[in-house]
Length: 308
Image 1 (cartoon, one colour):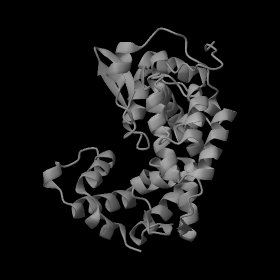
Image 2 (tube, one colour):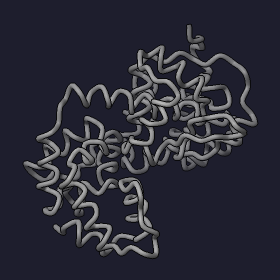
Image 3 (cartoon, rainbow, N blue to C red):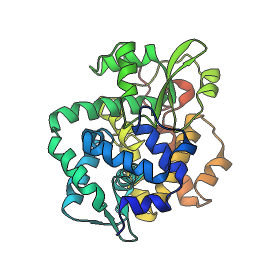
Image 4 (tube, rainbow, N blue to C red):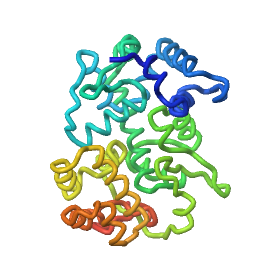
């Protein structure tokens, strides 16, 4: 098992630098900072403010860090959800992996212990809900006006005005590489950084009332990209987990999100997503209508019901 410092020597500098710019308010230019200096900055920052570590994680990931402080975890390919959570921890450089195990590198053990000691479950539960709802709404819509967003949030009893929302987003480490506040043609929007299609979506959007999602469903989109509270989607995920490695499940779901988002209705494209496997293709055809359509403000083809 190697340390984070040793890992940084092998990691592409572009990837390390991108993470560093998420943490640092005034980052140095790429050409003027070394891997070692980035590493030193991160460790120094975590020790000075261990809550940075908590702000990078959702509650499930914090609980996984607690487990990993006690022991490494075997990589079991247990499923899509575990894969997403572990991948987030890996991408945030809070854990590393061997061929067989996930573990906390030795040079992060003390900072993570310090963070866990500061962890207040009730406080972070509220923050976790807010972060998940913001990300979930953006994943459903791809791009959403701030006015519409504030209206949705109010219906879920999450109260912001535009100024406080902008400030919250600027300080959100968990979401700052996934969503972004922008001004487009003099209007403020929140856009997806996972799927950068906002200009196309805004050009093609139609004025159709959006489908209603419960708070739990929005949170599911924010945490896992899919609505696990729809039984067909849950059953579909179970079907995939019986046959595929979680890494390939994630690729299929990401492709299906874009396919449904643009309402493509293209059988050849869907066959490619299915890898030309007939059984998988038939499953994708059945499940695709349950995914949000970005062009219709998150409008599902099934069980359409306006927000009231």
